[in-house]
Image 1 (cartoon, rainbow, N blue to C red):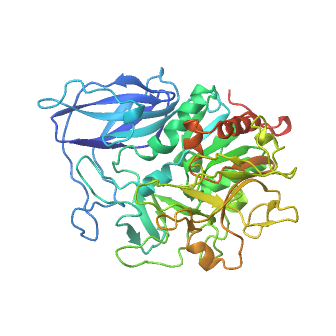
Image 2 (tube, rainbow, N blue to C red; image 1 turned 60 degrees about the vertical axis):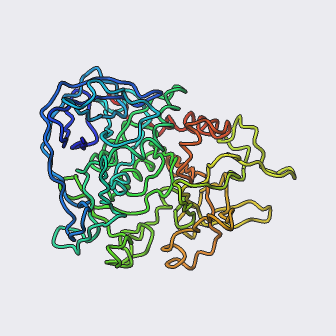
Image 3 (cartoon, rainbow, N blue to C red; image 1 turned 180 degrees about the vertical axis):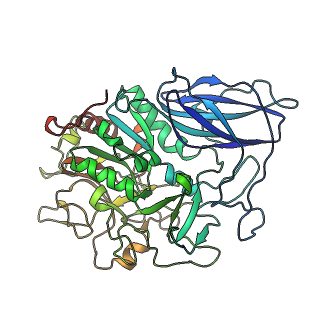
Length: 494
């Protein structure tokens, strides 16, 4: 048995990666990979002495359940990051050595990317913006919220969703559920959302640089070296600083593409020197909700929320979209795709899609693929006299937001699965918004341009090239937004 975690998920070329490993083997070693069009092996460490360390129990004394809030505090090992390593998303695999262990187990590949006994981390260039003006933000806070800290043969159920730990708050300590980043958990979300899209980017000649949520949170000047920020997959948890830096970036002419959904849904507060966060959410502890309304809901008015609708940044919200509950995640989903609007817009260039403006039936973007879901975001809208959906702005969506694609959420399997329309916080706490719930693709410009795909699975459909129009729209998006307009260009890194 072997497992581990990294001290920080972001390092620079020439820096040090801090690794924490626990194993019942006498010896272990580390294998390193870079994620791109393949999972490329880039290095192997020597052997280290192994030791098995304790797992912190749950503070409520739950049998077999670990604490999601505690730093597991396993001893650290420092590993140099070679100058020759190419910036990108990397993996470290923890490999057992010694009697009874395979001397040279097979290398990991893309087909076996997901699993325990491995962790990912981001390698950044010494000077931001020297490799690319596109910055891909890996949604690490969301990853930690869902991380159950399970290990090989161990179901520990320790996350924000499984047996969370709630604190009432005190001087200098916010009230809410606490999650530590210093816990093992393996690779899950990276394999589903990021790996297909990262491979697609490299296959199609789009160099990008990478950062984590903590990088965006901690560095107010980070985005000045870039023209386009990518949010990919499931990007639910944002800090105040993350949001402030992103909004300033847009005001200064920077562009953002939310190829994601459920984006910026909960606010988090960094604690423990940036190795944990606290968020006052609606997740129950045992059979009770410790505090409702949940005050770290971005959109809800104070004092029962933050009072800054995520729509004002992203253009859309989970409360006007929905999710697809399923017995087998991510589940069967509708495959109708987005109804096309404004087919003459540059986003649709080269797709051949039509919008029905000449009396025909509008085409569907992503038809035949599970593009809509697993979670999706929407904007409050109404139809004009020509049957065109237009954002009303009543939920905080910018007035200039242009709806380019729409899927009104409807049950598709009456005896099996149904979309959960919106979120209980939406219709209960925002009854004045009566717009239909709909997955919404669109964009607005306010200095820079902000595009939203409105669905978590855009990078999956694009990455696996399941629909030519989705991939062409993505290329149009990247080609258009990868450079700011000349009058708003920020100084480039030197």
